[in-house]
Image (tube, rainbow over all chains, first blue to last red; front, side, top):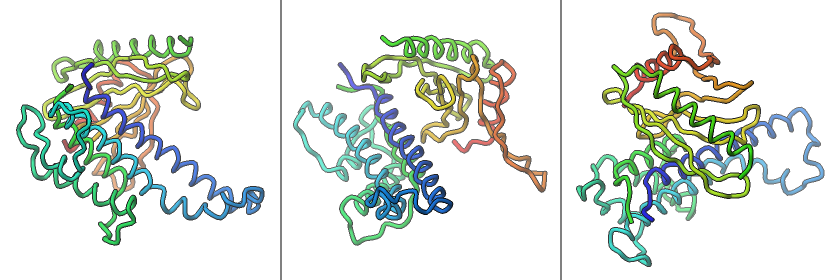
Amino acid sequence: MPYRRSDWHEHLVEVWGEYKSTRAAVDRLRAAIVSTPDLLSNDRVAREYLSQADKNLEGTYIVRLFAAFEAALRSFDRAKHNDPARETEAAIMIDQIGGKRGRGIQPGIRQRAHDVRRVRNYWAHESDEDPGPMTIDEARHRLQTYLRELPDEWG
Amino acid sequence: MSEQREQFQRRVEELVAQFEREVDRREWVTGRYPKKLRDEARQVYEVPALRLQKGPINLLLDPIAYDVPGAEGAADLYLMPGYDPTASIYFEDGRWVIHYAFPPDPFETQSVIETQILPLSAETINQVLNSIAEHAVP
């Protein structure tokens, strides 16, 4: 059965939506703790890691968002080369994937996807190179725009 | 198949059909495609999603879920290609309603952005779609 690009778009939407829900939950928990300081007194670990969870939440979800994007590229890359075991690095796939009708993807769109990849590297690999701030909304916008360049179906 | 899921499929079908019927055909071109969702038993099912195009502006009416707090169904209107959220549509109190924050009037000095809840009709559908298109950066 062929893979549909729309399904991959939806997968990214789901990850982004889960972030929005989790963000709201963490924000509300932090606010609740201000008014009720002993709210987490029976959950020591949750209490101790709340600030860190709050600080790292967006980066954590950017890692998941990029993983969903990378899975889409890998699916397309494997179908294109008729090799279900093919493993190509994300950076190479971003540059080499031909897009619709095999034509290259515009440099600006590729560059913006690479920027998200660097942010992913920073969070996932604890890279020392700070790529600068990027919101998950911006990351979602860039990755979805790149995916739009792929054919409607493959495989 | 759960009753909730079947009901959601019927409601989404009605929602998409209403957009197709009510949208101003002189301005907008529409096209359906099947969207896969999973129910509470992790079973895959399909509902229609709807692409809407007006010149360079591309929108997507995207059904989300029936398991939504305070509503019996949700769909979003995204500005493409970045999937930027613009409006939400909920099934509340037995009908679909649009939640949309009209952008402030640039000539008003003190404008407050408030999300409005509008019943779904030919008028509100076109009002919201045209407002999104007018303020969108494609």
